[in-house]
Length: 265
Image (tube, rainbow, N blue to C red; front, side, top):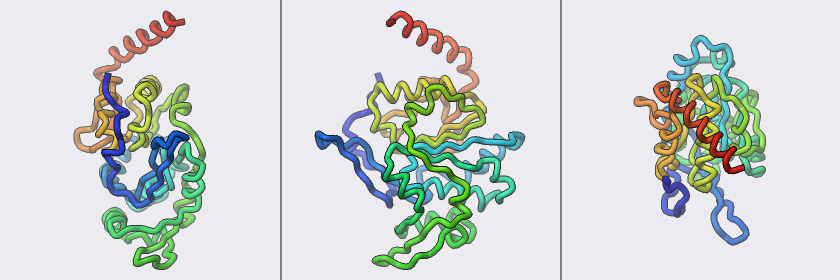
């Protein structure tokens, strides 16, 4: 059994501007909502280029971003799409469906107002040809940091909702789907992490793409995903695809899992 849920207080997610911790009644950390603009554990330029090539003959691509926190990564992705390929080409990825289990996160995401750190300004300027001003309004300075808010040309392309990924993926076929499921796996129990990997394996095919984060890899989620037929792209860190070579093995594994469930009953 792969150890997933250990002492995740030892390994904090890097590059975080928004910081939010949620504890249970016993005072134990349940999850964090840490995130930032253009978080550095994925290459947004490579990902957009990859999608444009992979889905060049596909008229509609579903983009789902789970554990979206306060929306910074959602708006980063949308801005990068628009900036790189323009609205006409980007429209097949819209509206992006952004989801989180925390109602407070969704409220913040819909508002789209942020105070950005110096490193975030660097990330923004590195990813957007004209910096943030085309996609974000400048709301002034707060303790030497710039305050910005997402413009309507970003907000119009996303739908935020409260949702739990464990429930979402059980029965939904994720064909031609880009699924961001990043930097929350360590907060799941070992059993739930395996159930999620199994559901994704059952419902995704090689037309889809799964994106995780460095924080997930710290707890061997990449190894877990390989067990369920996923393979990391050799050129794009944290991007996983279903491995065609494992299709037959996947079918056998699905049958054995189903048989095991029947026997338990």
